[in-house]
Image (cartoon, rainbow, N blue to C red; front, side):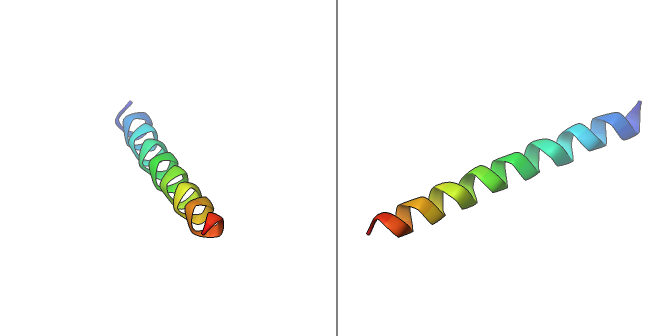
Length: 31
């Protein structure tokens, strides 16, 4: 049960970082 919570937290953080990276990448390409 605890491992499942840890996996969910890690997945959530990873998704946030990926979205930020993609957004930053696209904003840099527009200029």
